[in-house]
Length: 169
Image (cartoon, rainbow, N blue to C red):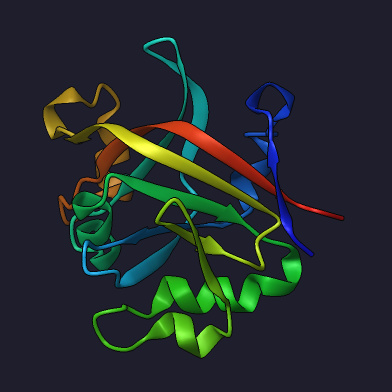
């Protein structure tokens, strides 16, 4: 099955329904190497009068190097049958092995942006903004205690959606 481009106006993600659904954040370095990570935090919205995605990446994640060096990245969403692969990609670092090859997922590219052939939906996005989440900005200090005991605050990325690719069913 092939991915078809979808008009952004026809895309109606169930952002809260995605809460329990993992996605992959994937990017390529200028030399063409690709890395990915499993994530579940992020969102869709409008910022600066543009349709955007919001994702967060901790500083120690290897994929952060790839996202930082690329102009764009992809978010991919999968059928439940890929949960084992997504779990593996979330536990193993690409620093240690070619983890993508061990899953059997297939990297494809559109306009140089990597995504996965097996994904139900691929969202391609161009970075607009990045900033480390600042500890002093938290009004609810309990969040720091619960989610950042090691003070490894995420980096927030806001990216404009350039393409939405939907698997033909």
